[in-house]
Length: 267
Image (cartoon, rainbow, N blue to C red; front, top):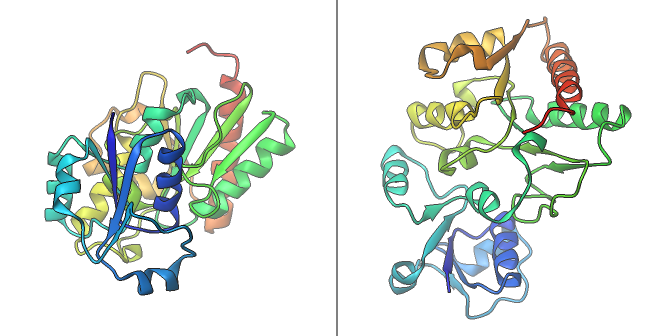
């Protein structure tokens, strides 16, 4: 049986732990911080022998078939390079890709330095107003994470808000629709280098299939253009307005109309 170990204890990783245990997998979880400190950050109940504090047990790490890294564990380029060298290291997005059967044509991933939450809520509101889908799931990184997304049901759509820490550790992105709202180096509060922050944000352009694309505004595209290595035809641009709110309104209109237009396409 596959053995999973989770590095880093937070609300999201606890959801991951519970999900894997429900699937019947041997799962353990650890953190370098003390239990007392972690309890000041999250509500931690039903602590058992699967939980380890103040260390990451070497024997358990070695015996695990897959190690799931939580956001916040990777902080510098050395951590990043070491993480990506090992195939058994994965993120919550990779775990979602493995277990869930959501079609990529029904997934929108939104990232950006600023405006992610506002844009996601705007798109959610417009799709609901237009009655485009029977059910819309919004992964807000708080109540809903990649570990507690419901199983796909016909005529459903998934909007996922993804920050740079999660993008950095994701091995593969699977979604037809993608948006990057903005890019500002000064929004990097967790990584110790600008290069790592840039690498994380650029992942929104990775793994694009034939009919996948990224939506962005001209200003954001201009900042990232020299670092983007994909066919620029896969990037749909909207003109910037004199405020983030107005630009987001344009992004919302564009993505909603595109989703509606593509509903009858076969994948």
